[in-house]
Image (cartoon, rainbow, N blue to C red; front, side, top):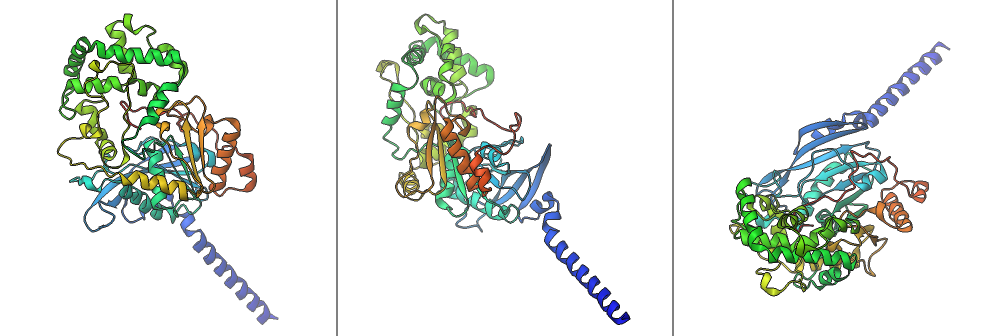
Amino acid sequence: MRKALRWLLALTVLIGTLSMAGSATAAGPEAADIKDRLLAIPGMSLIQEKPYPGYRYFVLNYTQPVDHRHPDRGTFQQRITVLHKDVSRPTVFYTGGYNVSTTPSRREPTQIVDGNQVSMEYRFFTPSRPAPADWTKLDIWQAASDQHRIFKALKKIYTRNWISTGGSKGGMTATYYERFHPRDMDGVVAYVAPNDVVNNEDSAYDRFFENVGTEDCRDRLDAVQREALVRREPLEKKYAAFAVENGFTFDTIGGLDRAYEAVVLDYVWGFWQYSLLSDCGTIPADAATATDDEIWDSVDTISGFSAYTDQGLEPYTPYYYQAGTQLGAPTIEFPYIEKKYIRYGYQPPRNFVPRTIPMRFQPHAMRDVDAWVKHHAHHMLFVYGQNDPWGAERFRVGTGSKDSYVLTAPGLNHGANVAGLASDEKSLATARILDWAGLPAATVTAAKPLARYDAKLDVRDVEREPALRP
């Protein structure tokens, strides 16, 4: 009897020991602090941790190859941020296509799925720029490879479904990433993503401006733009004083006169990109009788007279380089302005990049992506604004695409989102995002964002960039 009891006791202890060991093994990674887990990734280093209720928020550097085809030929530090909710939640991979914000924020898909968010700074936007900068390594494939390496590193921690997203150039970035690494993400939500397939064929933009909004609003905008060119001499004197006062120079674009016309010609485009039809009342009703200051103020508010100065262009050199080598750039006509008032027209991206940086356009790049989306898109959602000029040339899904959609938010601009879609389309888009995130069928059917709206965390307004940039 005693032997039996001793045997039973020993067995109980053994089972308990094995159980505890098994539990410790299973819980080990989960129990580790998320910061420790992130910093255990080779090449990952901490810049800063910032508190936010309900989350852990990290600003990090990640070591990337300058050239993913030849990873032994130098590295650079790429900034990323991680908004950590829980490793059991889905993860949204966001890029705006420019600099990354180091303030905690949550993009719309992140709120919808109540998940984690990883945000990436686009290569060559400072401080994520190799030194010295080999500009030939700034292309859409290299940037997609940056995302791919980050995903592979973080997928070991965030093992649930991933959705990539971005707005404007970020929407383009999410699309290019999917084209080159279609097995990484479980879904893509691309907002207001331009798709300039044939760079020298831009008639779609001209048709857009002939019909957008109302005739009265179009006439007001056209008149102010024309008047700003008619009054070029007095307003350029004001511009020169403005430049001296702020220490602005014009070496890259080639002079104040070129910069002035570039700002003025952006005016109508800039209004529809950032404003709503209801804002037409802010435009001078009679440009011919408006004062110089009223014309100046309207153009400066919408286009920004600092945009084409050296100081305004420099932070966006990577964008203009890409526009002039792969992405393409729009050109539009101005039939309501006499030719004698227009000296340069829409200037090419080459004029906005220092001449010390060589550029050569690659017409096949966007054609390749466009064809891939039409024939291979899978779990992709494109959202556009009805009154956004950048949507005039957009991505379209074709017969080869599956579970992919192109939706338009009525009356909205470059800040269009799922929340602004018509009711049935909003339900469709929300349900697809929840489904791609791997959430339960009942949650998908309900088609409602899972996280409560947070005014500080959830960004809904269009991210305004001075001048004509997506």
